[in-house]
Length: 170
Image 1: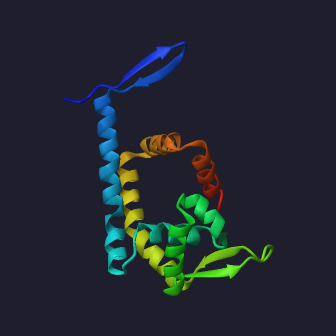
Image 2: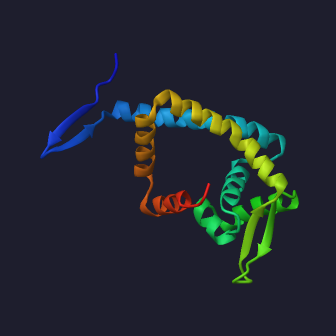
């Protein structure tokens, strides 16, 4: 039997009431979706002795060439020590370059190399295909609703970072 979602109007507003069971199922769906979403890149990363942090770093450096280490720290929400380990590996393996900042020579700006861009593309291809198929199956209204739900789950600072990323050219 399917759970019912109740919409109750109060003062012209429509409020959505979900049971704890429905919320638990939503949480579990996110866990399983994330596992499926990361499975293909995890396989590639494991062959290289890399982890998800390497993928995330490559993704955001590729997305925003010249991204500073400080900005990447803020986006990833990790410690400086853990990011330094990841960056050191990516730089030593020739996937990322660290350049001195043009305006502030104390800054380190990050750029993916051709090899880094190729790896990032390979890691993301399966994820894009999975997202594309899911979006097509769900339809435009569901996609818009899904984005709204994801954005509503973000705290104010995280949402601001996400909004700034959306403003970058594709």
